[in-house]
Image 1 (tube, each protein chain N blue to C red):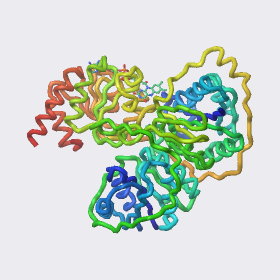
Image 2 (image 1 turned 30 degrees about the vertical axis):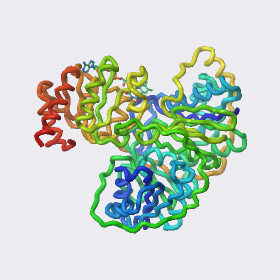
Image 3 (image 1 turned 60 degrees about the vertical axis):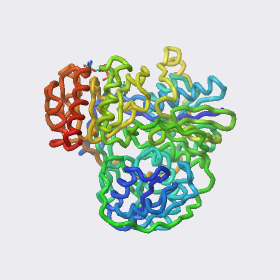
Image 4 (image 1 turned 90 degrees about the vertical axis):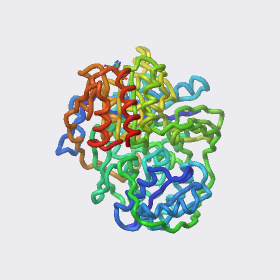
Amino acid sequence: MSTLVYINSNDGLAKNALEAVTYGKKLGGDVNVVTTGGADEATLASLGEYGAGKVMVDRSVTSNDPGQIANVVKAAAEATGATTVIFSHDFIAKAAAPRVSVKLKAGLVSGAIDVPEGNKVKVNVFSGKAFGYVEVNTDTKIISLLPNSFQPEAGGSACGVEEFNGNAGEAAIKVIETKKPEGDIPLPEAELVVSAGRGLKGPENWGMIEELASELGAATACSRPVADIGWRPHHEHVGQTGVAIRPNLYIAAGISGAIQHLAGVNGSKVIVVVNTDAEAPFFKAADYGIVGDAFEVIPRLTEAVKNFKAAN
Amino acid sequence: MKILVCISKSPDTTSKIAFTDGDTKFDENGVQYIVNPYDEWYALVRALELKEAGGGTVSIITVGTAADDAIIRKALAIGADEAVRIDAEPTDAYFTAMQIAEYAKSNGFDLVLTGKETINYNGSQVGGMIAEGMEVPFISLASKLEVNGSSATADVEIVGGVQTVEFGLPAVISAAKGMAEQRIPNMRGIMAARTKPLNVVAPADVSALTSFTSYAMPPAKSECKMIDPENMDELVELLHNEAKVI
Ligand SMILES: Cc1cc2nc3c(=O)[nH]c(=O)nc-3n(C[C@H](O)[C@H](O)[C@H](O)COP(=O)(O)OP(=O)(O)OC[C@H]3O[C@@H](n4cnc5c(N)ncnc54)[C@H](O)[C@@H]3O)c2cc1C
């Protein structure tokens, strides 16, 4: 059995890349990593600590062009005789993995949350309201692992790094401009998330949410109406028709907990709900509940986190 | 310009999710189907806007059985010119995408739009597979789309930000929030939808690569622990020592 893990190393090694390599190791057998991007050799060699036997790097691909990435992954899968190809289910995998599936005629399982049992892989379905088991009917399978489903496990030692020519071809997509707001923690991969809803009354009241988030090192999120009326940017909208997340901690203030909102967040390991209404449906999905006014509770919580950090 | 919009059905977002036949099938009992929100709100509406601004046609396509005609009419009511139904059970993403790619290739579309995912299977697979089948660029998770002659630009999601990209047509684009504003169908649209052409096409010979074999519900949540709103130190202590998340 041979596993190939694709990771993107344009911006160094992200946590979800380490998760994917760790997952590859859990499958047993050889683990080869193929990457596109600019990370230096020592950085790539460190993937050996997470279970990679070898890293193959194609430095000719410098953008996120899914066509080029798919060509490189196909070439690497053929070169290593891979029976399983792993992606982390991020925006690159969503673009490139389906192309690889067609190229290799190999079944693709998106959003895996566990290691396969035989040919079956567990995934989230109905936006996190249920699980499904997908059977792959082809000899080679492609698994796109949901971020934050497995934690990186280091233990091994550095591995070899080889330059690899994956015949990427020309980029079909030209990048004109990249906008990355400074200091923001990207939501899909965040481990801690502080979120707020219409109960906050207006965009001017988000300062306390941002303060709590920055004290915790958390990303910020919101309910759909809040994004729709423009209080917060669209990319913060979580739920069935927004981003689906599964952080370790989700703190929700002034959000009622409508079924469509819960769908996107109920994969969170721990949920804290702050709501003035003791009957708010969100309490049924929560681990810790506070019946109270967010305008008082959130600043108090921020203070408590500050004190905790000072003491520990 | 010829635009093809891929439409999928999904259960209404308030549907009770349950399974039958030994947890091997989704229980459709009492379930209302809607047009998948990403397909309707963003992909279809943006296609209509592009047509309104620059002319051309908008066709919608679905892979499904006659039972799906009601969903197709719902989408037509929002305003496409015609609909195509590939007459087959959409067994997996690969099967579905290969059907649509075949149709799109032989009918010369400039732009194929999909939603970024369905809200039932959340796979984000069909768009990329269609693009590979057509051998054209795939622009994934686009929140903005502008067409200028034979090329186009889009804003796409990347880790922690957005990127503006340029590409040639034909291309396949998956639409995310921000691309357009939801439109509510009016009475005239609903009436007109009844008589718009709905072409039923025989499927191409393709085998599925995957299948769902069973389903399970997540374990029930344990009781919610209530905390005194005055005592946030206790919450922090519990998050640290009991839940171990901070
Ligand atoms: C097809 C469809 C898809 C949808 N998709 C999504 C989705 O993806 N994500 C999503 O979030 N929604 C989605 N919705 C909308 C969803 O049904 C709810 O309307 C929405 O989640 C409600 O947002 P909210 O909780 O912020 O606002 P509200 O429902 O207005 O709730 C506000 C809450 O704040 C509480 N509150 C008020 N003042 C305070 C205070 N001072 N302190 C503490 N609490 C206070 C109130 O008690 C109330 O519970 C969807 C709806 C449909 C029909």
